[in-house]
Amino acid sequence: MKDKIYDVAIIGAGIVGSMCAFHLSKYKLNIAVLEAGIDVASGTTRANSAIIHAGYDANEGSLKAKLNVKGSLMVEPIAKQLGVHYKRCGSLVIGFNEQDLDHLNRLLVRGKKNGVLGLEIIDEKRLHQMEPNVSKEAKYALYAPTAGIVCPYDLAYATCENACTNGADFFFEYKVDKIEKVGLSFSLYAKEKCVRAKYVINCAGLYADEIAGLISEKLPFEIIPRRGEYMLLDKCEKDTVSHTIFVTPSEKGKGILVSPTVDGNIIVGPNANIVESKADTGVTAEGLQEISQSAVTMVPNINLESVITTFAGVRSTPTSGDFYIKPSTKHPKFIHSAGIESPGLASSPAIALYILKLLEKAGLKLKERSDYITTRTKNGNCKLFCDMTEEERKRAIEKNPANAKIVCRCEMVTEGDIINAIHRPISAHTVDMVKRRTRAGMGRCQGGYCRARVAEIIARELNISVDEVKKFSSNSHILCGRTK
Ligand SMILES: Cc1cc2nc3c(=O)[nH]c(=O)nc-3n(C[C@H](O)[C@H](O)[C@H](O)COP(=O)(O)OP(=O)(O)OC[C@H]3O[C@@H](n4cnc5c(N)ncnc54)[C@H](O)[C@@H]3O)c2cc1C
Image (cartoon, rainbow, N blue to C red; front, side, top):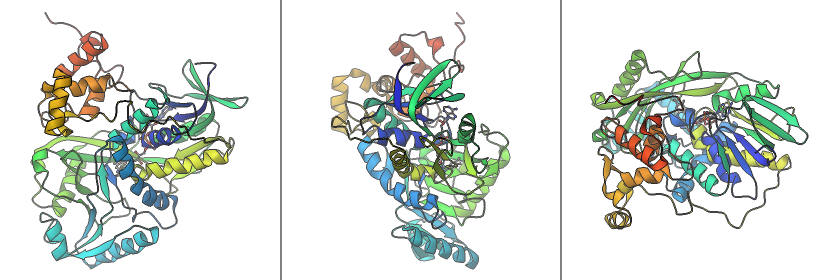
């Protein structure tokens, strides 16, 4: 490893780093992805609203607006290519009074200037036809038919698996803590380990300012951690709404939403509160109260008692208000992607292309390869059993009887799905890695039934003892020894 010099090193495997790896792996390049966490999507990409925003929210002329509108249209074809669940469900920002209508009209004008297609203000009759459960007090809505939903971490897994299949090297639990410029390359250290690369992309999310600090650079703004809390409702509530429903926004953000998810749940949240620590993903009683109240205002008969889990994500809000995607002022071959708050997920494919242009400008040669593999793995896109047709299921069971053994009853995940996740290009070797790739443990019982079985399958497939299997990080033990 010491002597190898990569063409490009990407720091951080959130959605921005993942999309960079995905786009770069189409070219004849040696790519390294350095991730502090144990898995892809260990940061903000793991916990957000999962909305592919249409692009009416960001100020006209901002980088956010440009990349949101472009990126949101790119997500669907990428999802299709890599077998990621995506749905263009459309969004509705609802208004209750004349003041809200003024705000919606401003968003309409801004959206049109940003280039968002199909935006319109609809009246209460149409709104209630489209969404019968929305409050009867709602009189207007801004309808954005191009908005969609996706599974954010699956989009990151898929793009990274594709990059890995195409030869990108991934280094996990690799927290870059020192950077040196040696000759024409950068040495990126994590404790005693070192990866060298000619070009570097800083996609470290909330910590992008700290990475800049490692090359003695201060970004021209501050990153403020702003937490958003969520509740996830059981699938039996899936008919509550079919579009993403927002209230008219305030200066704090796009406001709390009620939305379907691609997996058939209903998501409620987020609020927006500044927290002291960038790692503070705690959920508070007050926060849940705040989002519950807002949800009931929008959808009065929403069944909040059917909540199956709560969680929180932290935005990397830049004091400058816009995405910052620029070469370092000291090193032109070192590109920063910082302040990527919402709509960072929706914008991510376009952010990556923007970064590729900056790399090219800095001298990187992008020569297309002829052997590019378009799918996640050499064998295709790893369809889960629950997504298969009856015919596909029959064939899968004939091929491997493990596909007939249901391990997670809530989400209908088979032993075959789990084995597959463990042996995919980026191996799922903890219980949570398996959970996020297969949904085993994501249903109503939240893993109460299947977690032990998943741990046993991981142990068997990786030929380790079951007490070596971890939940989410290298020191999150599940078992500490035998009782008998
Ligand atoms: C509450 C909330 C709701 C949101 N809703 C939406 C939405 O609906 N739609 C939308 O478009 N956007 C949304 N966003 C924004 C979106 O989630 C982010 O813009 C996006 O996930 C940022 O991706 P990233 O790759 O820049 O950062 P991250 O996902 O945080 O990735 C950065 C990665 O870098 C790694 N890292 C950090 N330091 C180091 C280091 N020293 N060495 C190596 N690796 C390191 C981290 O472990 C992490 O995996 C929301 C965000 C929040 C918090």
